[in-house]
Image 1 (cartoon, one colour):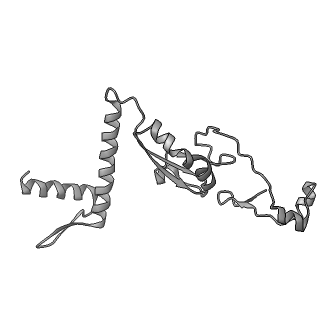
Image 2: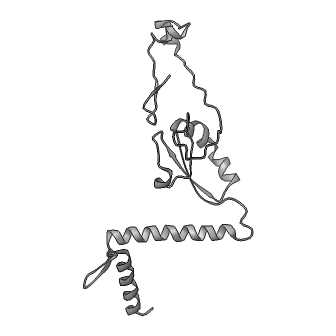
Image 3: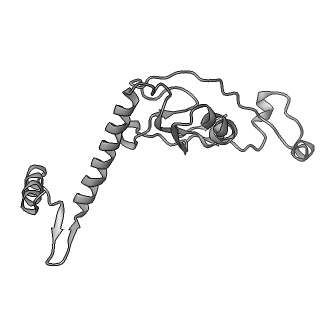
Length: 175
């Protein structure tokens, strides 16, 4: 394209957006911070469009693309991560991005596709599927039991030292 045409198109885009995208000096042309953010977002949108178009082409029957998943650290380490090779073998065209944490996440704002959580659903606008049952266990080392004795009732358990799980999602200690 002729340089004048490019200049006009950029000026029109900047006027439409109401912000400067490029910083002009006598020797250089640089993106402004807003221009860089706009460019990065456009690149992602174009990649999403290309991925969507590719998914509709004939022969594209296997799942593909990025899958962003967030889950508690313990479930990730003990259940999901040991099976990643198996998952990748079965779905080689999926780029899995795993986040480990218990904090509430805004799925839309943070671009997360799926969350795995333990407990009751906090947001009723989400679609939930039970994928398993979580069973907690109370245990003690032989040394602890030797020093403090083995509790026989729930009331006796209240008199023992315990390491409890604190849910950052609910703010409660889980017994």
